[in-house]
Length: 211
Image 1 (cartoon, rainbow, N blue to C red):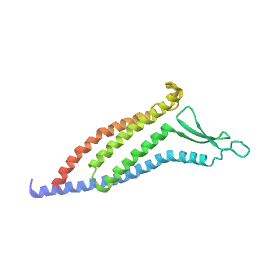
Image 2: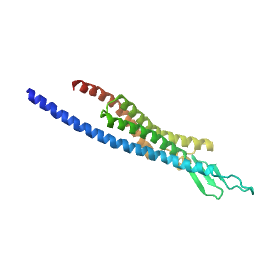
Image 3: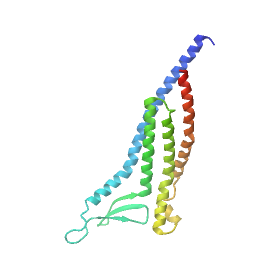
Image 4: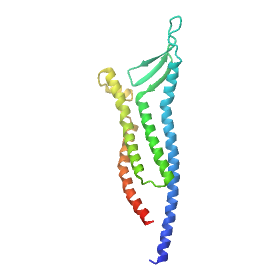
């Protein structure tokens, strides 16, 4: 291969490299925004019921002058749900503990993903040590989302009734659903993919040395 052909090939490869880098940054920027928006939505799923229930408790006057209860009261029913009812028998607010745990864990995972994509968008370097750590953290979070909410709900119901009741656990959603298994498999795949980032770091260092 002549010198002109060699430099021509290197020029073409450099142009392809630049175009791919631009696409990576653009895709990462969009992914960061989507993950951040998802984190906000998951957080609001827990925050809004909590705020509503807190307001109901703070505005409760308890017992009036004629000794009749006119406030709100907290009722823990035989399921992993916290409910607040008023004295007229109307449901003020409810918080499903397993679903809330799931939403909080998903919020954490999406925040880490948003930071991961934001860094890639800023630097254009997907093969970094921080990227590997964050990818592992996302995988672990997926596994926690698949396991922790159902375990928490199952323990609450079992301890409340003093026995293991499979029918009740299924009825109350304390048994992992199909989406939980899917999220768990996704977490395993992400953890399996994380070592590839380490190999990518080696290739990237070699590529940086050649440039």
